[in-house]
Image (cartoon, rainbow, N blue to C red; front, side):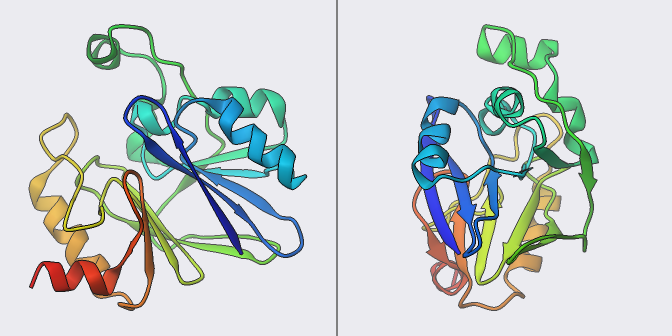
Length: 202
């Protein structure tokens, strides 16, 4: 599996493009700047079929609508708790100072679900905390953590609406029970491993 990282938007959200050996292609968290994303898709000569959202915050979803226009068959996966974030509301409008570029979805994911296509297979891990519908996707030896877990000991904010410090603590405990050699691909910042993040926390 090839993994391409594209930093998008004004807070440098990591959008990931996954391509397997037979050309299956998924996009994780297309937060903004769809032209950056489609440039890689075009260069690699692939057509994405799935968009996996780790959560519904604006900086992870605002290129969804453009990708769906360009690739009408693409399916968007999101946890049900974060569906309300996908459309404009006063909270987003006040925070951004502008309307949200809304996103539609096709499939609701839950803990333990498996998403499969070609050589790509994702296990859904529910990790509420940063938002009630935050999830991580375990794909091969790679863990895409959204804003649940960052490198160098960082975690996503839990002082936002629909977030919970207690839920975040439980979610992190769940992640640290996984294989420590897993690579961590977070929603912002550099990649890491679970082993490294666990060592930092002592």
